[in-house]
Length: 200
Ligand code: GRF
Image 1: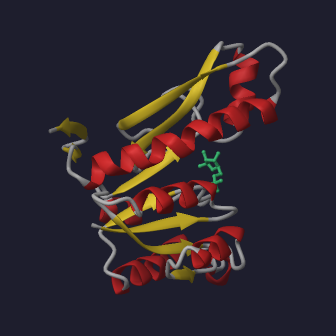
Image 2: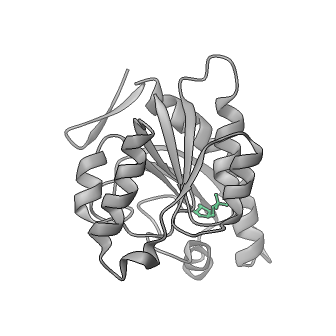
């Protein structure tokens, strides 16, 4: 399948996915990197990797979320994208887009879901006093950060950790986890069927 990676910023997860997808036998091709932010750092990194890029600026749609998503969907369709991978994409999708891509759209969230949904997950973990934290790749469903989890990676929370040290430790694992999860999805090993993951 042809993968479209959606980003909003530096795109470090996009880079690790693009590099993993170059390996012989990887079951997907990264065909497009699409950003909602013009000039996002990840766009330059994608171009340096020889990947087609596009920008759909959400600000051009003045709060009409569905119009913005229809514009993104058009770009994905023109590039014959089969699978949408959200990687540091900072827009909440409406049910319209999610329903169109349900079962073919995944996201990485920097917590051990269902713990710590939403933003500032590392702060949430520190405030909760957990000793274990991590990241989750999940199918996207209309409810935020609530989709079935495909794969997770764990890290310890260490004494003296602050948000930055914890985020950095989690990010290392994100870069290892996401390519493995994408391979499971792209190969059909972890399919979403009636809201649950069927493993083959
Ligand atoms: C990462 O922490 C990821 O978990 C979240 O967005 C952050 C930035 O990701 N989804 P990236 O460096 O832009 O890939």
